Length: 260
Ligand code: ATP
Image 1 (cartoon, rainbow, N blue to C red):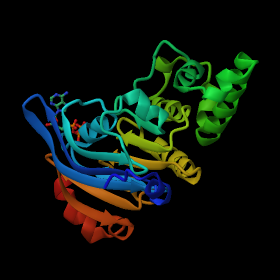
Image 2: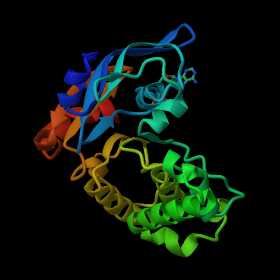
Image 3: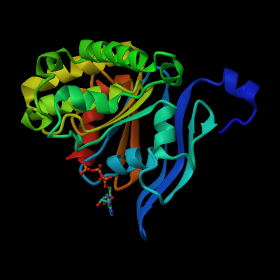
């Protein structure tokens, strides 16, 4: 439901809502009537094997797949028709599956690309100094979430390991201070010994109050992070579980047929 009355909007619980969502690539339909929600403070898993439609869902929410139908709202505000840059300004962040690191740029330069100054920073009389100080503050905040990046600030993006690149991709997204983060398979290509560090970073991110929709195939990674899970198969939601189910061996066993 999209609320048009400002009074209603003020008191509505903050949430990202997707309803009856259908997406097409040309004539081929990739998502069929998908409905899900992400409430303030939540971390929600979107599970499914390769080709299930996880990236399509995330990219279409970000406005990157044009042919779509259904309802999309954030904090009860209609998002249909908004451009990707507007969604970003409204607090949506995207961690793409392929990371999109600038390999010729250093870690610091990649993080700078992700930073967006707020209007008050550029209105300031001393706007360059203000921009730099806002950047430094945000950089410090992000480095507390991804401490391993601190020693790598001068290294080129192309010279990082898969896990380090993934941390950089997540950190770069955080430089724009998103409240709602759509993460696409952050475990992919990350060495098992680095996954625990990545999980700790996500836990710390959650403690700062961000909300995360996490597309994943790795159930072990989402356990302990997510309070809800949706399972996608061939573009349709086929199951849904709460935190109890995510930690229940029988439920997981039943979902494996959709994941492997
Ligand atoms: P993966 O982990 O492999 O990315 P996924 O769950 O994210 O899997 P999608 O990439 O969203 O799945 O793919 C869903 C369906 O849409 C698949 O059938 C895929 O072939 C198709 N598809 C994805 N991108 C495109 C595209 N750009 N053009 C046409 N079809 C596409």
